[in-house]
Image (cartoon, rainbow, N blue to C red; front, side, top):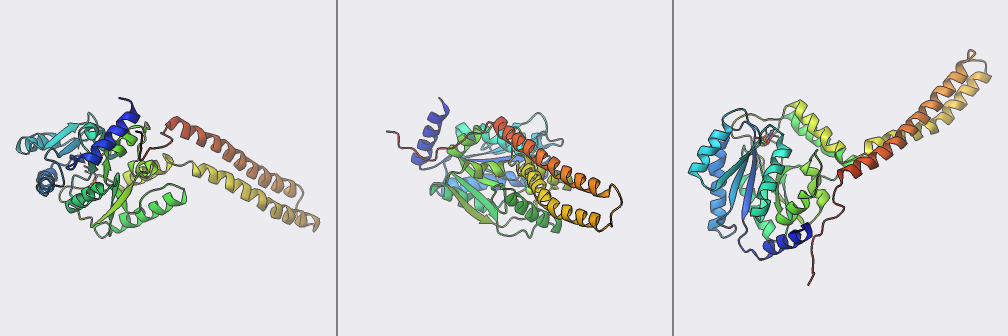
Length: 332
Ligand code: UDP
Ligand code: MG
């Protein structure tokens, strides 16, 4: 089946399936302490949705073991024996949360109507899962979990996250404020996501880039149920830089703008240098060196900026992203 047929088929499933199959995709890296608590809670949420007639009995949890170095996989195997609704895949190496989520989403794509990604530590409220599914059933293709507060974060994380969101916005990257990776994506959104072939994947940026119908569910993010955060300050900075550089070439345009601004400033510098020269305040050779330093400096920044513009175009082309996503069709 080609991808446009797949999109149509996915739409048909979502529209007519009264009880959607929901997949909870949980990336797990060294989560041996958290999983024994998280798994029964998530299975409990699925059971509740099945009982209430919101989700199909075929709904499941998919744990993605992201190359854990502890006993995460053997714990998952035991949990699967106890809860057959808990399925899993294991990545050969630690590839990071983004890749682990992507692997899980692409695995569940053919076998669910909607998938929800969430942390293995129950920081993403299980009750909000039900709200998300309700929003999906009301017609949303993507539902973003948005934190109502950041009380559970450290001072550093709270403020650095805010600064990061602001910087992203300034640089023209569209992201949802206070939303991290807790989100529902229906089959149509997953089909669109599958067409993004880039290696530096940043799901928080890609989902708004896809567009489609979206909704927001607010929730209180609690503290980790067990274990420790896998994000050191270094890792947080690295993912922030990845997020920006994989979405926008705007920093290169800034170089060009600085060059042009300096060129304008050169007029005033030139007047000051010439006045100093004619008033006899300058030693011989100073005026010509000053003028050439400022003028050449501005020209070099402008030239770098122009090269940057072309590199920016190459950067967009090599990503080979889909140029559009179809949200609705009437084809017959
Ligand atoms: N995670 C992962 N691979 C990694 C790092 C983290 O799969 O290399 C998972 C981790 O097990 C958790 C989720 O990503 O389920 C988010 O990580 P964590 O809870 O440590 O981040 P925080 O909530 O502190 O930002
Ligand atoms: Mg967490």
